[in-house]
Image (cartoon, rainbow, N blue to C red; front, side, top):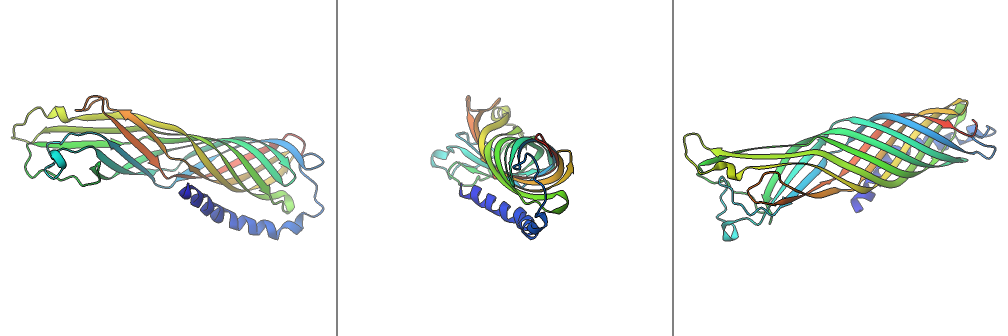
Length: 297
């Protein structure tokens, strides 16, 4: 929660400072201009936006209770000569992706209350960061082993669908230009698809060994969860008349961690499961959008 608040505070400072200074400087320019919406400046509107999204690096961490001492490891330093489990870590690098948003809102003068549905999707590449035993001690390679192994790990896409309630403050300027700031909270369906791991063993060339396939492992799962999310917005609209506004909006989203417990489709330990957590899910979205005011313009 502390990290969540720090991310939101940072986003407010980054995206809000410039817009605030422009809006405050331009307040005198709106004196005498007509209200948008109904006679009291109220009214309903719908909006639609689309654009690009970007993400900071995510973290993936997992663990299991696998007590196998694999033949290319030296487990002599462990109590009983066997591990009690393993921990592993990956850095996840998200590519630029797509973002779309549909919202319904109501104007209250210079304030707006809005319910929005937003989807952001991008491909995610996985980079191995480390592995330890469950107690945190490092793995030690065997100095002489008849076995050798290869492993392959990857991920596919990160998709976040958010339903949020947002409050906006408009700062109308001259010529129908309206910068604004906003913030909101909601719930998000976050999914990292195609989490894949495969480990294969074989005998070293020219060295006989006993049944290397017994140590193979395979897991291919999707990880998803409904989690809380926070949103900070900054943007600017231009009034085209006839109840139509177009504009750009920059949005920062912080999404809670997603985690889950999954089995293996192939493993030496029957019925083994592993726990996986994806954390530090922070995303920026830049949208080009349009609003249609339903109560006049």
